[in-house]
Length: 374
Ligand SMILES: Cc1ncc(COP(=O)(O)O)c(C=O)c1O
Image (cartoon, rainbow, N blue to C red; front, side, top):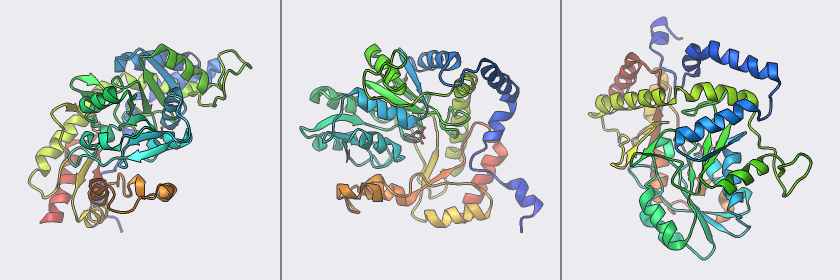
């Protein structure tokens, strides 16, 4: 049975209500405005959000989508990928990174990750290139930028486009520049729990290439630029008007929220430094957006149980790397193929991190972790 004291000490893994509360009136009014104008699919709020988000990223074009998965799918369609083509990517990510590759009929070619950042290890990429390689798709996992300079160098040398999966990294910076602006195209997700989350599904494609942006707009709308005329096979991937209205309001707070996430990460660094946990560290080139704060330990499963028993929320990102998922069994991988990613999957544990997390909650998380190791 849960006592009152235990309940007061509970730290939820995620608290979207805390973020919504101060914005609620403004958001209610914005949604009411969308309803009054019946701008349900795309519409002026989405168009304005696209402009705002492009400016936020420092990119020329942003195209809103109904999900990050759709945005990444269209990103690969823009590169004219065909069945049999290969795309180099990481096995340590949410499965949607690989869906985009599969949806265009191409083959995900996994490359192991860097132990410190969980991101694609650039030193291993070049040996995975074959004549069929058509793109490199790094992920800025947990909000920490992938090491882009060496990846871009490889892309240049082999004439390959770089596509960034920035689904978890709104506002993260690589050498001072926003991620999402380094590759030919980037995909973002606005799934509710993301650093910039819609109140439903949402995503965006960001690019500096006007032709890509124009074709992406057509592809998300049944392959048409003029109603009922369809130049190529397209999709219904439109962003909803209500999501554009919500995201416009929330985007104004994103820089502050990122600062707050970094505050929480800093406090965890300080408070957990004396534990046996492997803590996430920013590489010297990185300013992480700390979508997640992922610690590592061989006794991860026991620690997870201990946190949960003490009402501290936690989660696993991700328990099984993509090369070992049933859906990709046809690729013929076996355990041991990507040992760094597999070890990360065994040891990772995501602690609560969100802008509204209080000092008392952070200290409670630390206390319960210290108690585990005592
Ligand atoms: C790394 C990564 N890529 C792609 C996606 C797909 O985004 P969505 O859920 O909006 O389709 C996600 C979101 O969960 C993600 O975390």
